Image (cartoon, rainbow, N blue to C red; front, top):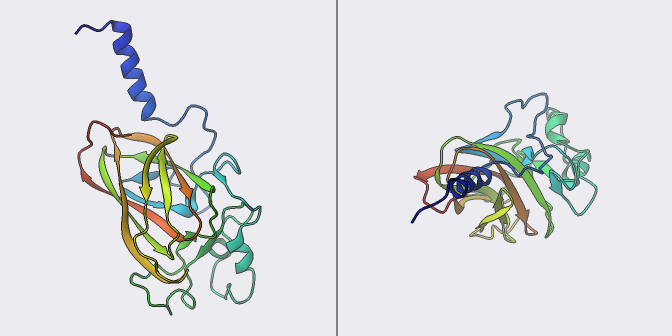
Amino acid sequence: MKYTTAFLLFLCLTTFVRAQLPVDYAGKPFRDSLYTLGPQAIPGRVELAYYDLGGEGVAYHDTTPVNEGAALNHTSAHWRPGISKRTAFFRENEAVDISYAKDWADFNHPNKVDPAVNQLYIGWESDGEWTNYTVDVKAPGRYKIITVYGYHDNGASLWINQQFATRLTLPEDTGNWHNWTQATVGEVVFSRKGPHLLTLKYNAGANLAYLDFVWIADAGSNGK
């Protein structure tokens, strides 16, 4: 079968676009005075509290205007001397609900896996909420996705460059927001390296700390 030069050029451009950020996306990788590394890298850990900059409707969508975690941490029972304001009130002027793992609240439960002390996490999700992450894929391939979480109700869906990629299914109901465990929750394929936009669309319920993307095989022919 013969193809015209124009058709072959169309195929090349289509493949390239799929591997890049959506052209209309206005969000920027998270950075602050301590985190200045740019896009989070894959393979590696994507910290969920480090969602993109850009505000409501661009970098995230939240159904309430208040960062519930930061508001709670302003109470004396949740913020103790020695905890930095950056940790206790992380991104408090934005609506995504963020808190942190506390030695007096998260390590006196029957955890199967302990999160790190002061580990930031997203909680208080409602159906329809989402967060965006600009990431830099260093190596194409098939990746398993591992998370540390508390509770259940049940995970999220992962989208890549605004296309559905996979469900992230939490396999175990831990029974409490602060009973933590670790699990492999899905797999995804990146067919090309370079910048990608990840979107987590949440179901109500779990505390989610991060996603570890672990390379397991070469990319197939139907990756994102």
